Image (cartoon, rainbow, N blue to C red; front, top):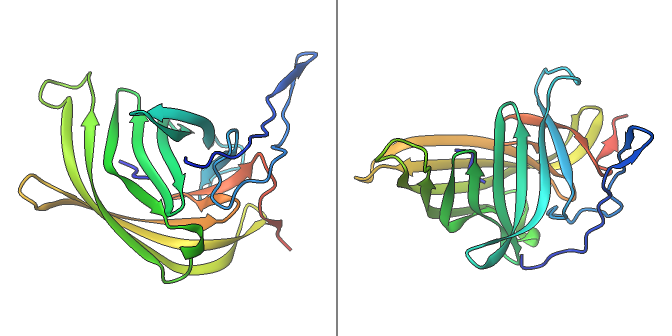
Length: 226
């Protein structure tokens, strides 16, 4: 399980335009927020060592959606057989994820997972922790497995800030380590996962927690490598 508003920004997204059988794709006219949340933003990722024309993992901000009477923003990731949507809120105290959906079911986190701190608190040495209960609902699963809960503890630590070069672009990233532990019914640890994200304000994830690297965006991101 890949774990991980109040203020909605005016959106400037250009839809593809068809002309004489061709599609013209335009970049976003708006500059993304420090914590990107604008509808239409798109990131494309590849695994380290992949060819640039290999199939990509593409994440797109699809926009606001209502969950349990509250407004969240949908981020949809497709590619490599995956089709996963996360629902996030951008609050004064950080970025929170409430639900993850995929074909066949969903996980809902209560309370929501805090993925990032307040913008002013993102610095080397920052650390934040939390606990949540993930409720999985999979209607097509065998009887007895259609609904279940898991307790999760997590800790995020900003371990470094440095420039990195990815696909001939230079980004100023915060290196964020994340460890999540899942507990069984008797309180025993049944799984522990550690992942690392490279996050660049105004850009997003340069290194995805799944180990992919950013190769393209539909907005101006980073600087050309020297």
